[in-house]
Image (cartoon, rainbow, N blue to C red):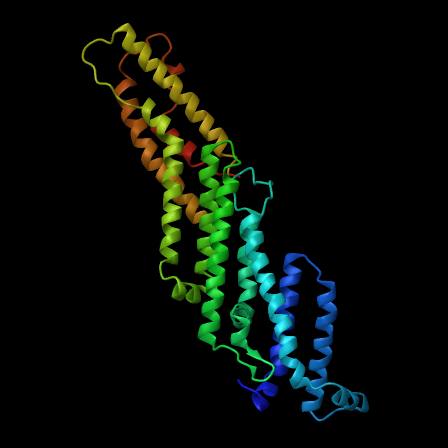
Length: 346
């Protein structure tokens, strides 16, 4: 509102919310702003005094304060200081998310702590969405000493909050892409990004602020579906392209030649070695979202089992090895399926 009564009416609530907000952000960032904390303590004292005054319970001490402090005169100046510090804290969150240089990567490709911490921060910060949205406005739009405080409406402030969240999410995705490149295994790169994008999507979809974000960016949910689908495709291609090449069937008629028998033996051997390595490695990887894990497992089975089944049915009884066929016939199609179901057990 403007000056006069409107200013006084919301002063205690306004300062209480701002003080809680700044303390919350400061704690979340793990930083103690000591000079600012002393300044903030003064605001708490003044707001308590103002509450006492409104309740007409002022003691002589408070009466003395009345003669020394003109609360309405200083209110907007105090507010300006709070807004500027709060705005810088929000900028710091975005910059820290973009520049986070932690080299501690999850060895199993699971969700990075930067992702989980950032999304948890959003959920907790939503309690202050209107404060955040107003803090992000240009200071001249908030008010001046003469005119009083002009607090934006709920729609505008939550739209500003959503814009800031979307900007931080963009910084987070950029940082995750850089972090993923630190893995020396392309499969792990894909799983890491898949897990993190899925976590972001699931958290946003169940968050109390999802409607605010979607109103600001209607394609938000669809964007994450595309990111997840892309990483699933990349994972499948990176994991099984070599296997698919080994399981190609080359038709023949009549008795196999020595060269053809050797080629078939080499294909079985190479596939068995590759498949064993994939299973051993990916049993140590993790996909924490059960629904996503089941989806990846199903896609693995649907892709690889028919390929192997067709290959094995064509060559198993072809006589490619008369001395020791079991050396090459290590798996049946059902055993391949069973092994694929054991991936991501970590």
